Length: 408
Image 1 (tube, rainbow, N blue to C red):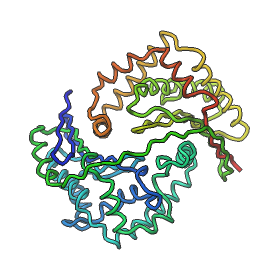
Image 2: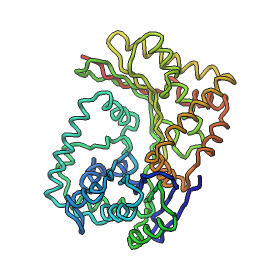
Image 3: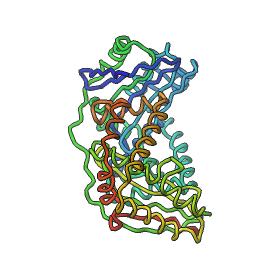
Image 4: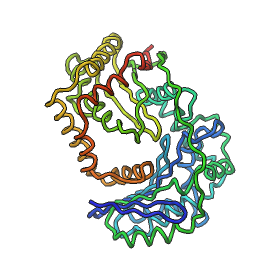
């Protein structure tokens, strides 16, 4: 199915994919996240995600929240290391209402000081809730360890100490410095004629003054492998092993996504699952992950296991990594691996909301979106030699960092 593109004179871009459903999805993705914060702004991108709904020049809080929910729609937002997204899911007839509200929230929010103070308490609770989940917290601690001293290693939630100081002036300053119009993409998946959609986007977003990005992000280049152990009051030991990896723009990213899927993807027949969980029963939670960013990436293997099993599990993990480094996949193994990844992508692509996020981020970073067929072509082009070369580059023992939450 075709994608439709347009760029407004102020730099804001639009991408749309038609979908013949009763429900449509639309949002704005801004190329600004926690890695764009100065030291005194730690937690600001996520803070804005919370307080941006607290009233605009046209609406009070109640009217912002009710504008779409009164018609059964869902309004939400999220923040990552590199993006902030405000989006909605709604019946097809409410495109106009949705785009007007997203514009109002993004560009007309007033950030009343009283509302900011109330939302700080909400975020403190969110931070405490997150600290109660070591299987989540360890991922952020590991990124901070791998990207030591670099903004991309920061925890998205920030710290209570910093958040306590945030004011309306600080919020507006951060947005003015980082919410660049040429780094914004309005993305849509739904049942609407593109000409009509374009008219709505022009109606609500064309009067926004251009604010173009001039400075480039600082690239992370100083990785060194480190080993760290922290004693925690937990029932399980939690462990992460990993390395820096390829950016989303790197030509090796598709090959590595395939290799990661073979190693420890969601399939129960992944090598880690078969070699550790199924064979020995050492762990319930076991997976490998690859997160590509715009100019770098991170690879990690996570395992949660009881005392007595951790060292044996780590040895088995390294055994599987060494197999991929030293032995290339056979013809049938490679074919099955490709079929599995393509099937998983097809199933994920059935969800139009996920599809909207994917095409929006792709257009934001690559200035284009890829169809499933184009992605399949990239996967089919991967060779066993490509995978073994990447395994030797990323899985080399001397390049792997380790973080362990050791149960007390």
